[in-house]
Amino acid sequence: MKKIAILALAIAAGASLSTMAEARDGGHGRGEHPAFEEIDANGDGAVTREEITAFRTTRGAARFEAADTDGNGSLSAAELTAAAQGRTESRVTRMLERLDTDGDGALSQAEMEAAREGRGQRGDRQGRGGGFERMFERADADDSGSLSAEEWAQLGQHRGGPRGRN
Picture 1 (tube, helix red, strand yellow):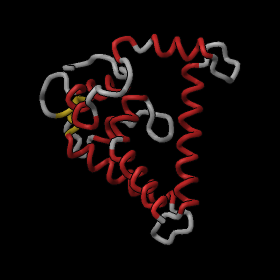
Picture 2 (cartoon, helix red, strand yellow):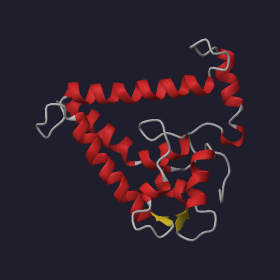
Picture 3 (cartoon, rainbow, N blue to C red):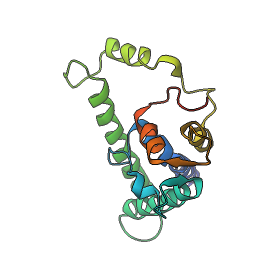
Picture 4 (tube, one colour):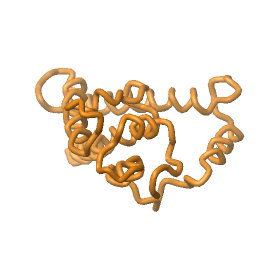
């Protein structure tokens, strides 16, 4: 039971940053960047932290419902495992599409090293600071406290490299 609680907590923690992280990585749980209009709920041409939080909440509820395959309002170990496996398979597919430069369906050490070298200033993920606030601040190049359509589009194109402020 303790393992299930820890797994559920880990999934919830991962989902809390998923919108911004997936946008940065070009993913949207289904492989595409969420449209600016999906996030800009009031249609004012700017995405606020509140709109991103509302989008994450709505999408989180939809993901929970999709994972709750028996519809009982809770996630069993089997349902949690199936949901995690689905996300992993999707990420592996996108990784192969992005990094498999010779098209053989596998990643060689040389392809992995080339991908690492291609990160430029990004370096490893540890110690960078980060999370939702850092990503939002970096994307908000004009310091307006919201993201314009252009800043939102840039968020999906720049994979962790310098943009806006550092």
